[in-house]
Image (cartoon, rainbow, N blue to C red; front, side, top):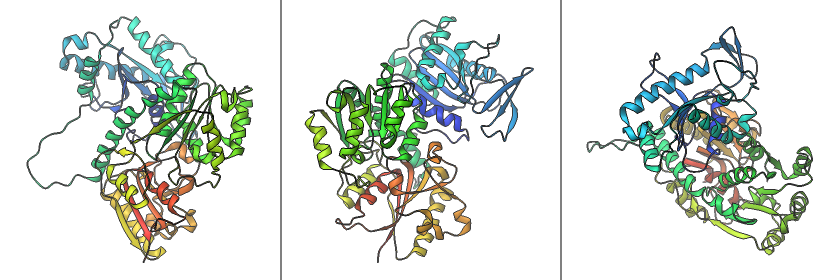
Length: 527
């Protein structure tokens, strides 16, 4: 995925498709979001929602969320609440003309043997509609409605085959040709400058971090092959080592093999977040308390395979017994992968050493994750030095310094949080939704509740349902224990005393600090 996180386009549908594309293929394919080619038959500033480059060729995708209707050749859009309705361009014509302009650019700028071997085509995605209508102006293979979106990888393979059969090249692009195409479409540029004192804007620093995270995460995904090759796996890693991404990739691999899979966790917030990202046929994303009911609703006696995320929260014998009942063959003989982190992160209070020992006695393959692919080296070093936690090595390269401020009371804390929001959003150029404030308290018990009105209106309280639409349009606020398993570009930690090594609040420090991918701000009580 280039970039590693979606651009702020205002389209929730594009953000959902972005996450589904991330899981649609293994290595060898690249998806470019919001591409703006310089050549177009009639538009001065064209845009393509997604361009997919792979061995089969190059393909443009247009995404139209909400309700879409066509009357007498006129296309209309209505959002999911029915509150907006307006006329729009024919999305098939939109995708076709954008693809034509991009093809002209490629023909003029790529070696002949590359563009001559490359099939091209386009498709339209209606993620919220059921689209059964056939027409002389589009073929069935060109459309993905809400049903086909559930397995976007399968639809894309059919789309590629469709355009190749329509007269496109029958060759497959090799790695060198793919690299050439990718470099032209969206190159990495490291231009030399004169020796002057320039401060890189914060939003550019964050963008650089996000691209490094993308590359590290792609490398870590290869560990999913190890998990897939073994029936029972205990996978341990600190915060930021890619456990949730691996769980998602493994779910895709197992369901592709025809298995009925359950991905289970304890946190309702994490469950809603995962469910919004993983609309995969054959996968049930469940809470431990609801997995038996989800099994029945899926029409199953037992699941074929089980994936546990944030598994440190399920190291208790009651959870072990539930999972043993819903897994074919039980935990001793069934297929499962258990992702967990014991670095002070078990905030649920359910941790039972005997539950972990029970799983270890089954003799699963033990798979440690040692490479941190979420946090910058600056954040990594800060957490390791202040908390003594092992959250992996390497990190996502250099990044902004950790921002730290000591305050003595709630009013000072609120004033500093207000300054941090100005520095990160107004001055630094970060999108409001890329910033989350984390506190051990609910909003009205937090010092954040004392912010002045002009700052308070910029903040939105997150809940287990709004988390489906991350990133949101405002600076988010959440309780630390509820945000566990999630992350954002910038995190502001408030209302915690400075850690002293024996503090009972140490797990909260750990969880809160490691949610930050690029920017970490800490507003801490102390004298």
